[in-house]
Image 1 (tube, one colour):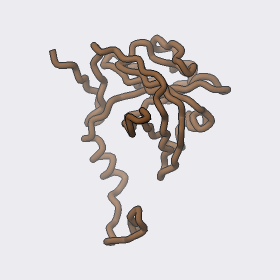
Image 2 (cartoon, rainbow, N blue to C red):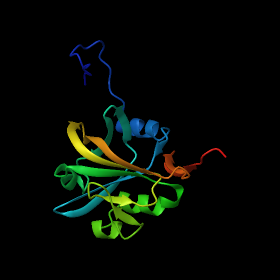
Image 3 (cartoon, helix red, strand yellow):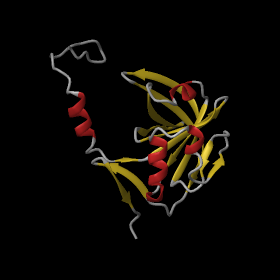
Length: 176
């Protein structure tokens, strides 16, 4: 396989890494654990994501990646808004539930969910919740990259953070 650079210039023919090697490398990239939620005609939906990052502060924009094979993909594809709820160390069960095969209604039975400004479910005790309007979606490889503009933020300045690293959960606490 040839890798073509963004400007359509091939500088050197190099084979891509294997999916296994990539996953092994990614296990050493610590990431915050988030539950991304929305609401639409199908009802409430959500999934666990570590592929969330800042794009810009003007306007405030985040991106989140969603596998097109995920059970919630169609719901999010039809959605216009979402909330990115960053979890604390107390939310491992919520992460596992939203990351597993639990039916959607059962996912929201765990945790204290309130309505956000856009009407999406927001985790009341999240470390931080970003309430967003979806502004663009790009398909890349197996995933959709969802770009969203932040319209409201709720933050607990005393919260710790739930991280995923080396295929396990870890806690990051504020310095005392």
